[in-house]
Image 1: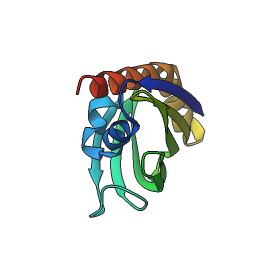
Image 2: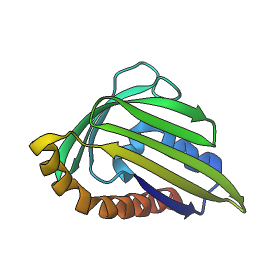
Image 3: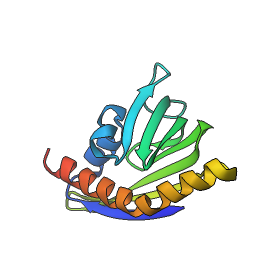
Length: 143
């Protein structure tokens, strides 16, 4: 499990809309190679995507939005592939500043293949979180 917070100089509604827009995700999420919707609706509970992250190795998942509250929460959980849950919460700090708290949990498969994946992925998690946070702040604040 990984937790991380970042503050962004932008109103909560703008930050939430940017994170909620799947088409911008590749611009800020480190290692995200593809993210394609598999449902007609692309926002809110039930929106489902197939994605591939490349962090040392290619990690494939089908993810679905399992929690969504306007300007407050986006939660996404895998329903197929690499097991993971991401929870993004948004807090209005006033003065057009927003705190984004990310909570990410994942589990890799067992056995020799899982151990090889873990050896490739674990050293890159810190880099991925830092790069993702920096890109999110940079992309939103430069809009």
